[in-house]
Length: 68
Image (cartoon, rainbow, N blue to C red; front, top):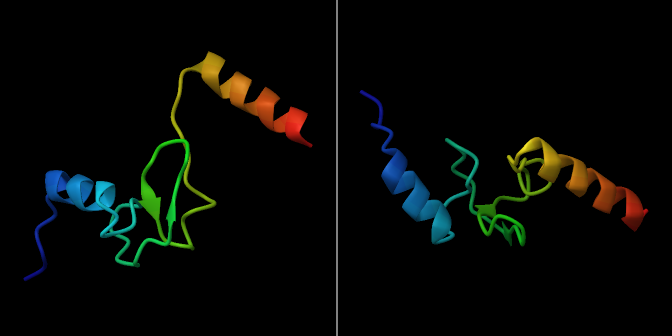
């Protein structure tokens, strides 16, 4: 039988940098996101998304455009 998934344990382990914050990823985290403070493995560090309201999403897009 498989391991039981406990979201509280997963959140605690991702906050502590023990596992990647991408659900069910067992890779060791290598990066902490400066925006959301979660830890991600090299595979998921650049691909994770932040969920905000529509105004925040547009502001983030505008800020990224200014950086180019």
